[in-house]
Length: 110
Image (cartoon, rainbow, N blue to C red):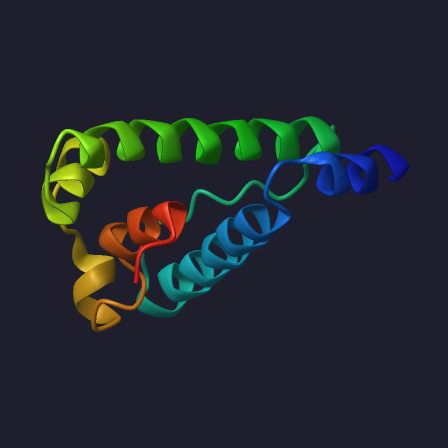
């Protein structure tokens, strides 16, 4: 447990980790409510390692998005390139839980 606390305090942007975690939980809840298949794993043997992998994924995704935005691509185009086209989750939630909002949040735009 202390390793997880140390990780969250030492990461460059704890706010981003928190936002990504909240978004992941919200997406899983919406998936369950609308009958989408869930990717949730019931038990995680090494929670700290899983958090580190999740943080590394979000940071890598944010960096790739930042590079594409700097090249002049629109937010929509960046999202489509990195995460694919819109899906049913965006439709059923009125766009609140969308790939576009994930990229926007990682880039801290809007």
